[in-house]
Image 1 (cartoon, rainbow, N blue to C red):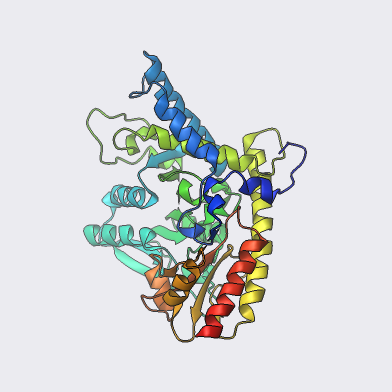
Image 2: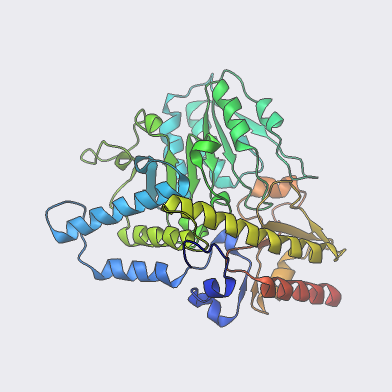
Length: 406
């Protein structure tokens, strides 16, 4: 892969994922992707070198400090934010709970927070708890189950001078819907509200530009885009400076360190950097890592979109199935239900043939209920950079076999 040849070489890419050698077709990437060998090697190399708490005296201390700085720079490039905007934590969920508790300390009974029924519960439950603790009112925004669209006007209708924060997904992890975040952010900011964007699903499929989105906070999880298991929040530095999170007395008061509880997982941060570097080299064009990421993520989008079209065409030919992913702007993630409600049985049938496409509500329980699927949910088919047409054909053939045998 060279900087002057932004070709998407799927076979060369797949060869770098050891877990693909067994022949499984993975459509479970919305729950977590497979990882390239370079990410695993980064973890091994970090744990094999001298390492201790951060500092500047010993080699082990300097190694730790360099790892953290490199990871912040990598995620800064990935999200198009300053390095000091990047906060690391155990998971996006835990970071959202931490920030919800911190942000809501100034709320009271006259304040309001907006959440949506399209969101993963990780961007709902923390705000419901914050509202219950502070006495603030919760306002809900629904989406249209027939189109899976969440209209900007629906959010605007709930905004008022009392709104303190809008919590919204950049892309639904079950149906892929991408709300118009820039428009929603402009409307929220016009009434003085903050915007907390769950970008966990979105970040795996888009050129992320937190500044262009207008998000005050943006969460993501590297394990959803080829990296290790940890969480990341990008927060506007001027807002972070105003917040006082729970922390140890002797922990740093500087940002973003004041938001990071305990010793960071240095090996996971190395893996995070390796994942960003891997993504940047998939179809690179440009002199900087950010420019290469823009080119590579655009190439990933084109590749996944083409596979999504093939999937949709094949699934639409099966009248027993309903595809709930219908929004005009959406990720390559399809939620499918069966007329007889046997999504879980279909997932088990596929798994027996080494095709991973799980069934459930995927922690977006409000969305599942809104779609009329209850808590059982549907079959989720998600695409990743390493999927190819052979995977799609296998799934479609197996789905047809399941429906024929039913």
